Image (cartoon, rainbow, N blue to C red; front, side, top):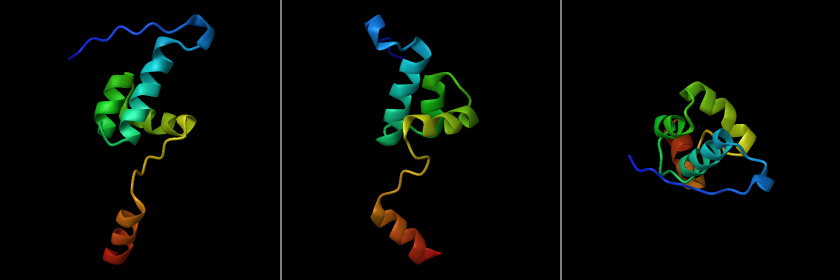
Length: 75
């Protein structure tokens, strides 16, 4: 595991937990982390991570329009 030191100005008003969640949500949104990996980075359960995604405007379902059409056609 890598350790990263990130200096965030106090004026941003973010605590360490919020920063971890922001990073985890973005990596999940971009498909770089699975749900479990992102939850682990954010140090919350998968269920809590799912519930928190909405606060960060990240959808649980990361499908492209083409993938959605494929799923509909396969249903």
